[in-house]
Image (cartoon, rainbow, N blue to C red; front, side, top):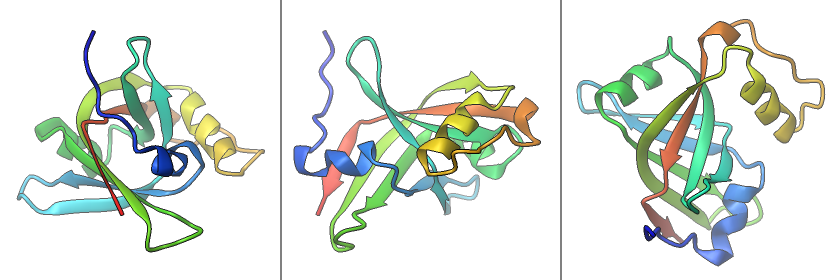
Length: 137
């Protein structure tokens, strides 16, 4: 059985609650690109925790990840903005979401009970990120 880094217990709520995360990827020129993102924490059948994001195949972040799968996510504690969790990992899967179902799921997770699929649903995918390293403060 594979070993996975343990999510710091005092910070796990930052990934479990509907907080916005700032997802960083590497642009083709080597510069960082960071954007706020909806996300959800998942645990696979083998126990490996992953993060999932809704995205499209038409945006720069998707192209960045095709060239360099390195990703990082920073989440700030709403109750104490001096506390944060950074997760480093890589893109390990891209799942098609042509009906925008995961987009709707995340929209509802983040408080929009009436969330409907977006117009760009045919281009929607779910980005799956490994959780390889945690830094917390």
